Length: 203
Image (cartoon, rainbow, N blue to C red):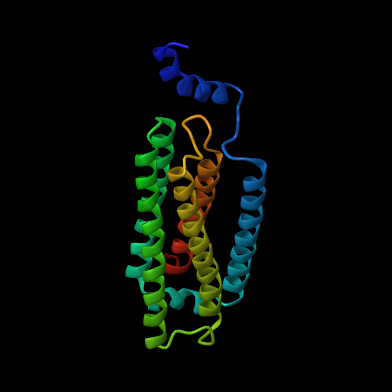
């Protein structure tokens, strides 16, 4: 195989995947994503049912939340998804070092999200907002804490993928683990993009 052919191999592989309609990631990760999204769907159904029966509480509830913290975390999550995409692009271009750096940016973003959420919870407590305050805040804590956990173990998974990259486990044509965490992280991001307007914006 010539040098030119070797350089073109990753591109040809990606084109072949597109032509065959290959879905990124493996069956196991999509089964996990389906399970996670089903869980969030149940939470959203609970939210809407509770809102229908308690319109006044759900109309006033968001007014007392720390919208700034929610906005910061929205920007953080969107940025982290961008970093993950760049990591995949870098790996496909056979740039594992750059890929690992982008993933570190995503993992750090996940850490920032957790820190902001922790201080938001402390702020809530200071202002008398707890699970027992009313039904809206009970739903708010249930949904956001569940998402908090997802961000936590998603960030840990990113660090594991970084370790795998640094150990030479992935190449430009074989990096399924990276793709798996990428699609999983986008699911976490999508969940937050839904949670933020529901709890912080919509009255």
